[in-house]
Image (cartoon, rainbow, N blue to C red; front, side, top):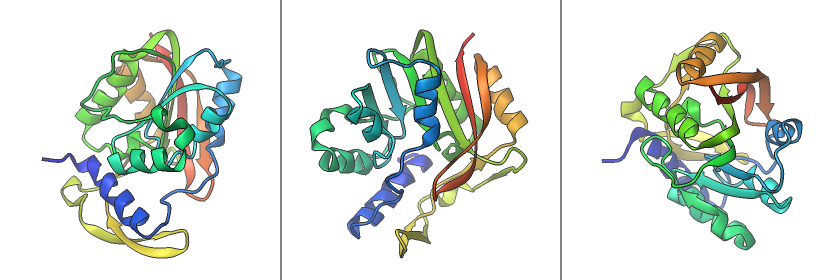
Length: 221
């Protein structure tokens, strides 16, 4: 039985069937800003959780970074492999809630992933995955939807139900998927409870898609 968060795979399938994209092409500025500010080098190993259609991963790969780009959606990964053939081997399927890797990374980042996880046990598992896959001095950038005050969650039992969304100006019937938005205080508490030390935190946005996002750069305690 598929997990509720795998409904994103159905969303990608529906959108790609119409030769559209779910997200734009502009990379998330917070990713490159974090790489530069915290001195992530071309020799460091990087893991992206939730690469989607490759908006952020292709930017780093073209700059020569040692990046493993992953997503729970097979459709998203297949799309990236087809679109970015030169870097096809850098993309793979990963369920960061229930999976594991036999490698640790100097830098792990995820943009707009944690908010798709609704039950707290799934959110805790996601944080544990990151903590368990960081090197001793590794850092992680975690970004989630929210303006710091809003709280809401969707019903995961209807994650695969269809709803109308606009992608690249065209209306498409896609899976409703899932979302949990927490306050800035709750986000901070989750991170500390997961065993992270917060190095930096604040607010950011992703052009045309997420006008309000919270972010944190963390390391293991």
